[in-house]
Length: 367
Image (tube, rainbow, N blue to C red; front, side, top):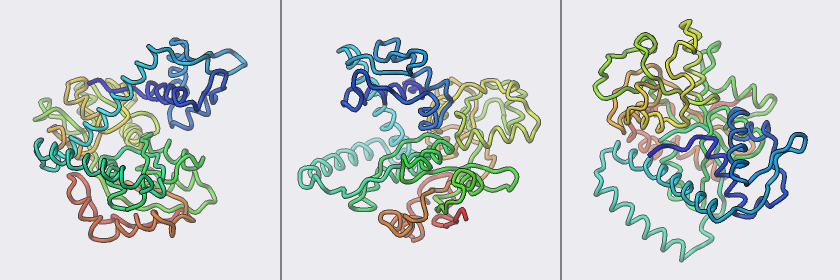
């Protein structure tokens, strides 16, 4: 099914706040600039979300007065919100399914495991509503491996929950800076130092001591249709053959790396057929190539394996989890460090294709 674009996700979030009573008629919404910083996107994306809701009669935007909630949602609008919520759930479920298939499980095994898990969680919910004593918030770059950890978080770390929103590397770090989350994840390459993450963390958290905990190194490259029919072996081949390209959104670590590669190779974005065709996760890139919407994209090997697509390796990148230094001895942050540094965490990561766990659990500090 067609993926929701980011502006629709923003609009969905606002509708949900209205439905839940967090926003009421007459309430003023954040400025376009403030909300774009919160979501790690362009101001144009937020403006499009506001325009979408204004067209539906939900918001009222007036020059000099900002954007306010016009009134309660109609029944038709409530029905549309339900459809979008269900579509989002289906997309998350599909990510889990593809991840499990890539690990070698068949559909029957996956279905049986879901049934068992559902029964266990129903029982747990009845027995102990207060099982989760603390839920931490994650906003950061999309990673299929970390997504898998998040679905098992309370199982790996009993008593703790994890709420996840994928927003891109830069958006995640900015959300952490604004204390909208407790932990972030990024893979930002700095061309001058030829290193990942540390330089960007230093810039954003100037004067603050931050922890960078390595999740893993990931194999990044060109994801291509099965058997690579156009025999693509490099970014230059994509440009030369005018292959329809699926790009990541501004602020995503993969987009930062790709733009740096274009500069390094003297290639203008205008030469990339589909440079403005943006996708917000590695999984979306995989789906777009699988269904023929685009012919190439930069993404993770693990996604290519999950979709049965071809893959051309380009670089090994480091994905770090970032949080404040004063949290390092607090649960569940110290438990997370211990798990990654010991055999159990490394063994878990080793199951996933395209990941190197050699430096998993390594800690760096921003100062």
